[in-house]
Image (cartoon, rainbow, N blue to C red; front, side, top):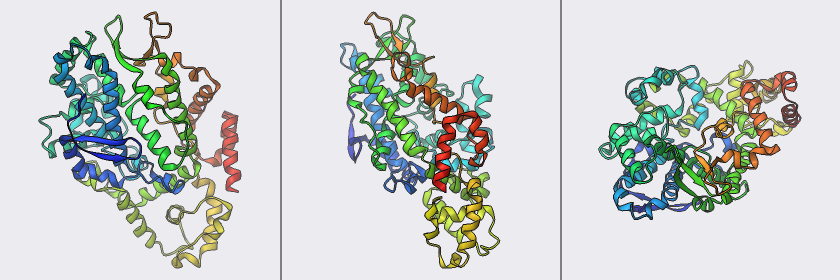
Length: 490
């Protein structure tokens, strides 16, 4: 599609990122601008100092990549003689996909996923007022299950998408419901959007409108979605991690929309591009091993979660679930300032509690290593340094969590052979197989190990290192990993 751009951003990952007038209006709004004050990787910057990039730049990148994927998938349609009949409708879908990419992380709180700890035990049904608006868009048969979902940043994203479109008066051009139905399968598209999908489906091959919607959703959530393509490159660049290069241009030149004999649209992948998709997964594994699950990052993350729970921000949970204005006020700087004020209020270090201990460890950035003895303490706490460090040593295994968590949407990777929308014609005989069955990586020891590890992590996500004996019985390789961490602690 030809983008009627207003201007462009200069980006270290993608080069020029063009944007339209409508996108500029959304980007300039305070709700979107707040993403400049929310780090993409939370406490990773305490391990990799240069990883201070934000959700703001990531979301711009996802918008850009979404548009690139859309153009590649529908390239044959755009180049066909039939294009003039569908140009206007296809252009509308293109705009919606880009805006979905731009706004997909709008609901992230301070320090990303770590902030969600204050919502533990809360459900979507606990939201109130404008924050409950997205419930109106959910398929009737899914409403109960959706209401009982644990409260996450995505639920705030959907509500804030509705707010920002209303605030910018762009709701006459884009339906928040339809933008969000590209991000979450629980949402039913509006009648107008369904009719749009129907018209496009008829002109590009006669497949079903539901499967066409599935193709559009895959641009934002799949094996090669825009979110993943951007964050892997952006995060590795910012951290200084040299992951194997992702050949995104090869992927773009190797995908197109197609339909099967049942009238279902899917994304066709050329078989010579299988290795390029494999490389995305390998790169993702490397980033989880070296960055996202780095033990120091998880250690600091655990301390930060404890701090957040102790701050006055926790007392505002009622407001945070009732008012979008209260929610968008929270950012990394605000949390850091609240922690500083909280630390300043700690007077009696001799009688320090475990919670206060964790707050001090986070505030002073104390690493769980042997050389912690030389770390600096403020004059207020310096005289009690020895006592604090002694208690720190005794409490270490209570503080340090297993540096392993679920691989975000790893289950999607492992199970996508059931309904993957990405398919390959391996034998050039017209019979397509899903990507996971055609990929060598899913047959290798590498992926078998990941699958086993994910299964273990899924069942042990809340266990602390002090329960090492229990972990040893479940998985020997995990035991070796944790033992190494324990020796590192000293």
